[in-house]
Image (cartoon, rainbow, N blue to C red; front, side, top):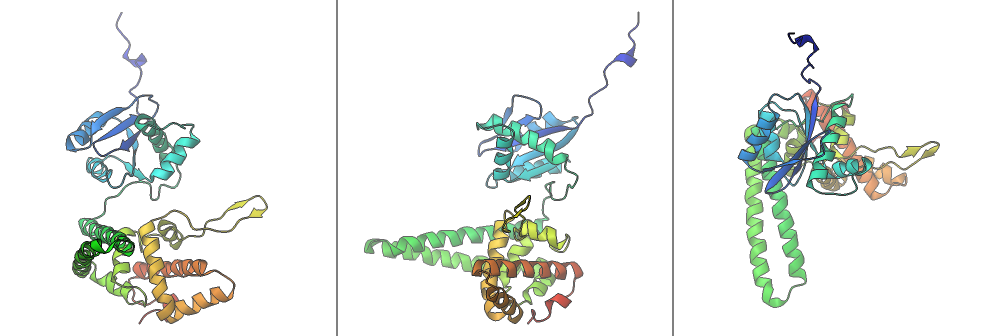
Length: 331
C-alpha cells in the first residue's frame, strides 16, 4: 500500500529564538526550548559557522548580550546576512534570567536565558528600538572618535589622581604621561571637529547655535543619539535616560526618577547644562525658577537637560535653526 503523503507532518515554520553569550575568545549560543548550547570562536570563522547553523531556519530573533563591544562584530555579521538581531544591556539580561528562575550563572545558562528573552522581546506589541540597526559608516567613525576621547580623558584623570598622592620621584614620570595625553586629546578634538565639518556640518551648526552646546556635546549627541529628529520627545528622552519615570503603586505615588538610557549622552548633556545655567539666559531663568520652587541642584539640572533635549529633537526634526520654544536660546 502506497504511503499517503498528506498524513506526513508539515515542516515546522514557527519562529525560532536564539540567545548568544559573548566572551573575548568565544561565544556560546542556544535555541529557546533546548537545554544545551554550542560554543564557537569569536572570529569570522565562528560567525560563519553560526550563520550556517541557522541557514534555512525560521529565525524570529537573535538576542546578543552587550559585552564591552565584543558583541559588535557578530551583530554586524548577522545583520549583513539578513538575520534579526537585538543587542541587550547585560543588567537587563541578568534581571530577566533571575525572574525566569536562572539563579545560577554560566555561559550555557546565560545563552538559554537570552534565547527566552528573544522570544519575549519578539512578542512585544511595540517593536520600536528592539532590532539592532548598524549606524552608517560616518556615524560609526564619529562614535569611535568620541569613545577614544572618553578613554583618554579617563586615563588622564587616573594619572592626575595618582600624581596628587605620589612621592616626588614619580612626579616627573606622571607629568610626562599627562602631557602626552593632553596632546592626544587635543588631536582627537581636531579630528572630531574635522569629521563634523565634513559629514554633519548643517546639523552641527544648528545645534551649536544654542549657548551652552559646544563641539563635544554636538559630537556625542550625533554619534550616540542618531534617533534625534526621527522619534517623539518622549522616546528621545527615554533613550537618553532623561525621562522621569513613575514609581507608583496603588494609592502611593512615589518620587519620579530618571533611569537607564545612554549614559554617555546623559552625562554629556549634564555637563553642558553646567555651562548653560551660567551663560544661557533662558536656561538660567528656568533653572532659577526650579531652585526657587525648592528643587535640588541635581533635579534642576536634570530638568534643564530634559527640556533642552526636547528642543534639540524639535530642531533636528523641523530642520530649522529656530523654534518657537527656542526663543532666547540661540546666540
